[in-house]
Amino acid sequence: MACTVFITVPNRYFFVEHHTAIPFLHFWDTTFHSACKMTGTIHLASENNLTLMSKKMLSTHMPDEMHVHIGYTGLPFGLFISNLYLHARPDKKHILQGRIQAQNG
Image (spheres, helix red, strand yellow):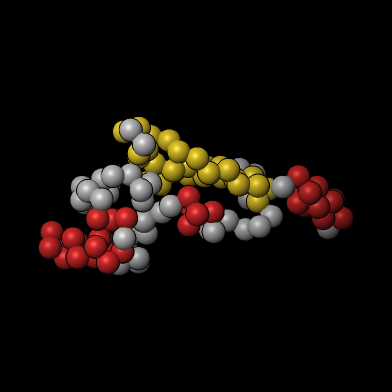
């Protein structure tokens, strides 16, 4: 098992959606769905194919015993930044518990 996780994902609130180049309409699911339908990329409107991530949504995908830091990275454009990053590692308490279990077991 890895001790550290680092991932980057497109920022839902960057002004252009990365996969479709549709500006602003991806901020809301209903307008993004309509825009995908009109541009022939309707498969991207399904969460099975594309999940648009915000900082809040990204944080919900990590277990509670992980120390998580989420920030911005990528291309800055005024108030908009193109990507989010997540850096996660186990809390020290859980690392020690894991070491004790490994020694005993």
